[in-house]
Length: 380
Image (cartoon, rainbow, N blue to C red):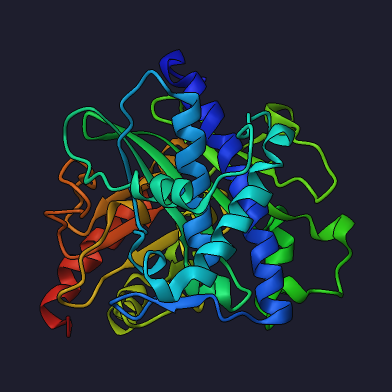
């Protein structure tokens, strides 16, 4: 599958994302069932949970363990500031317990765990190791430990996203979607549920909830695996099957995705674009990079995001999803039709207005044309 130079990197990335998803499912279940005071707020008022820090710690530890001969550069969302105060001892203890509980299961995923439980200082070190700012030279792992934390705490969609950038280009991406059903026909069912984690009307045999998608640059292939159950075994590549974007190129038949929250996305502008293109269906508003998963698997045809003034897109919110969609046959650019630039640090610098993702060139051309027609009349 593609360049064998990345065979080990992709294999480890897929396995650690599966491991991270198992952690997230347990934490989300406890959060929804019992509630928790271990939900904090960042400076921008977005939430951060035990799962965010714990996933970042285990991914950092696993990458370091598997690539000991490399000087790792990891770009990730979380820092340790909120975990390092005297008031946060209980929070750090919760993260430490969660990390060790998860790493004890590493062998089930074909990964080696630590010889003994990690201490709080080691956890903080692992999280802090993810402080790279990326750039155009060398290799950089890019991680969003829990993309869509608001969806996570609400029992809704979220994703674990891991990508590898080399010389400014995304060369592989893995996207874990623990609440995204394997079967498209179940999407309408879960959209109507208040909390996905409390579904009871669909049996586990038919619900088949949760998947991991992955792709390697230049392979022309994108793949999807189911998440294993609590007592199941990791089947590896044997459980994967190829995914493809939708063949729909008529806007009237297309489904378009956009972020749930209005705080960093202009819904009125995207609604106007959809109308001008002739899109008839209501938007599918989904938390997190699950929107990229929907495009890659053919569940939707268009994803638009036009941030409000002052918001800057971060590379960890897009890197994994972009390569998966493109290798599945889709098109990802900014609103000017240019490829996204992952070589300029933490942010997608130079982004022309917004991000457009389409299942094919025909829809993409129509959307870019609609952007140019509508822009002067927009309220961005």
